[in-house]
Image 1: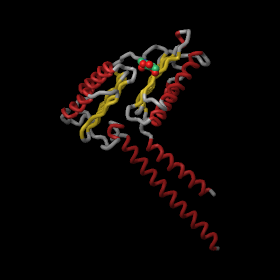
Image 2 (image 1 turned 90 degrees about the horizontal axis):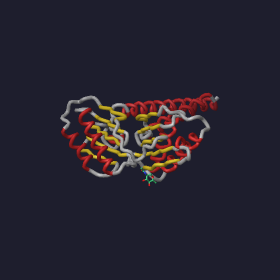
Image 3 (image 1 turned 180 degrees about the vertical axis):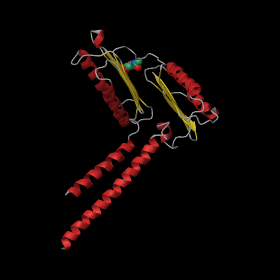
Amino acid sequence: MVKTKTILLLFFFNILILHSLSISTDTFLYGGCTQERYTATSPYEFNLNSLLTSLVNSATYSSYNNFTIIASNPNDVVYGLYQCRGDLSMPDCASCVSKAVSRAGDICPAACGGAVQLEGCYVKYDNAKFLGVEDKTVILKKCGPSIGYDPGTRDAVLSGLVGSGGYFRVGGSGQLKGMVQCSGDLSFVECQDCVSDAIRRLRIDCPAADYGDMFLAKCYARYSTGGGGGAHAYYKPHGKSDNDGQKTFAIIIGLLAGVAILIIFLAFLRRICEGHGK
Ligand SMILES: *[C@@H]1O[C@H](CO)[C@@H](O)[C@H](O)[C@H]1NC(C)=O
């Protein structure tokens, strides 16, 4: 009976590993909270919870939305928005926003404001009004290792992204992929201005880098020169270095667990057969 338990455990272990492979848009990129705190069971807490519920519900049918919970006391007003990456399906958007909201709750307990960027979505809420306000503050900058290539092709791809339209843009040639995303509360002109700034910074700050991520407060631009190729290259612009390694590791562990299950199962069967043979 101990063996049956082991088999079951290994089986669930395998399922867990395979399941974790499919999660990529939930990868945490950054998060932050305001210093300002609210007290438990206050009207602010109530309004914030209602705002967060609205965000999560709305993400089942729209890739961007904003909400304001109005209150007579200005200290109890809550503003919030979420923005899913333009290529996410609605179910993926909803699942991403719900994970971002719970992540914000973990890292910002009782903070009046919080913001979380996952690979596939962004969520922000605050007592201060930030909706519709352009903000080009650099929040996260990551440059890959310098691989000493001529950045001409990369710059051409990045320029192409400035030139095209929409709040979500992808471009590239061959292994080189670029992507930009604006927050839906910006006007098109503001989006354009924000994207140009993010790309200008990528060019200056990540010269000849393997990949670059430039997250400003209301838009981001990312590129990858290598990646694993295929679809994942712009889902995870710097996916090659860590994610593919993790994937390979997970697959190997999964296979080993599978083989272990088989061996134990065969040993178990043999035990039963031998038992009957006596
Ligand atoms: C917020 O949402 C409302 C209603 O959906 C919309 O009319 C408005 O333009 C949005 N505001 C911003 C700043 O995105």
